[in-house]
Length: 461
Image (tube, rainbow, N blue to C red; front, top):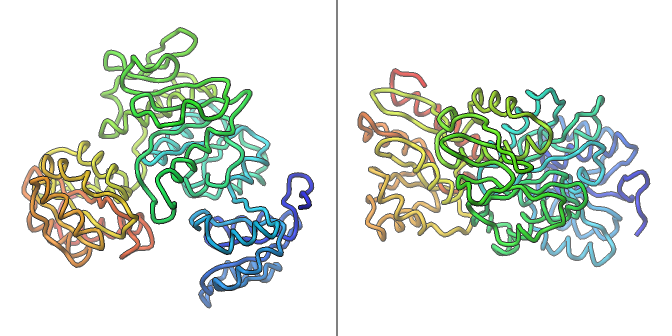
């Protein structure tokens, strides 16, 4: 297979999947004189101006599963992150000599500036956003993107170049990686996305790619409180830093001592700020702060920049976001809780008895782990969607509250408003994906806010 020149992919090039990542990749390739052929399972909408512009620039679009049978004729194929990598068309293309890659492997191999990558089953968006803010407050130019929102490939064409590329990375984006970021954090690991990954072991393998290819000059940051199997052995970084609430597990990195966040490095310990000054609720958010502190100080940020950024950080939408308060009831949007472990963290973080809205589309996860937490924290359980019955069963088997099934999220919000009492927290933490009713968790959270404000009456968050 012919190699590309100047780090560009070998031609001819295919882009498989024309979502946000695929479109950004196609635009980047066009800007470097490469006209890719695009593949997508579904035909575009007639008014899709973005795809029309790409077509006018010379990008041919081939539609339908059967069209992917031609991938073997391409030297390189950029695969959309959410596509199963064991898809028969991809396997056939590899046998024919096509090299599979993706936006993130390409960015990590071509980036001219140092990269900082963060992954985990939970907390990666908050940690990424906070780390980027710390570095900016330390006077550094930062590009923040990847799974966070802005396609990472856009960073390759920036002028002037940033000091750091700070990237949130999902398992889907890491799946094909043979390069790791210079600074890399694996925050945690819990079952997720088993509708796309063929097994939990495949999911873990993909996550470990963020560390596996590190070498000289690189730094790995791992969780001392919740060790991930294989993380200690993955890659050969120059330094392994740790973060955790238990200081006995952290020689170098960030931890908590005497109620204060501290950074440890070179045998020295520097206090950053009191834990009570962290504005985000929950122990899991303290862990996110510790991970960000370890990463940012490894990148050269002083403790003062860490403290300033943390004190002013107000979180990311749809992550334990207070969206309304009325009649002594708090309404909290944690739509990002698309797996049971995230719902458990949310239940531990909020105050008072909980009216929980849970359920959605199925990712092949085990909902029985929710049972003891539903019994301990939930006063009223409202279920919806395909996973609603499994969540109801988990509560019943653990002696938790009986589930009240609702046909959709709007009906669940109406029921929650009717049943909530002063002192309660109405919590949207579905433990499930949103695709049964919405295009994504953000749309679900926006709808929750809208319906809460419509049905809960006067008040404000």
